[in-house]
Length: 178
Image 1 (cartoon, helix red, strand yellow):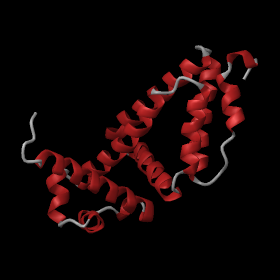
Image 2 (image 1 turned 90 degrees about the horizontal axis):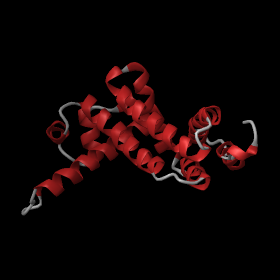
Image 3 (image 1 turned 90 degrees about the vertical axis):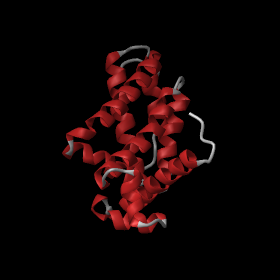
């Protein structure tokens, strides 16, 4: 659709700014720190803007989780070689720790809220598809690779190093039993 006066672009930008503010608040104080007023103040907008662009604070949390997932699912969809997967996990380790913790805190909401399980399923499917491409369909190796990536990304969020050689070995079906 045409956007002759730029309102759609402005609305998209404001939605992204509100999601960014939400992620910063979650990073600083957890999900409990997210309120209409806190998000508005963090984004430099009036409180009414939060509910203008998102129907509720819960919807804003879902939008933040979806935005985080969009980024990683796109990265997983582009994985065609072990080095691609290693780079993704290493990027998790190099990220600002507060951002990584915020992302994981949002993913932990999935355990408490059934309406978010679709985002977890989307991550799981993208990671499983990438693992299947890399392992040549070896189901056991694929399951180990999925578990390793999930574990290494979580470990990276708390500052642990990434074992790139181990990830690479898990991708190689010729390396023998995993």
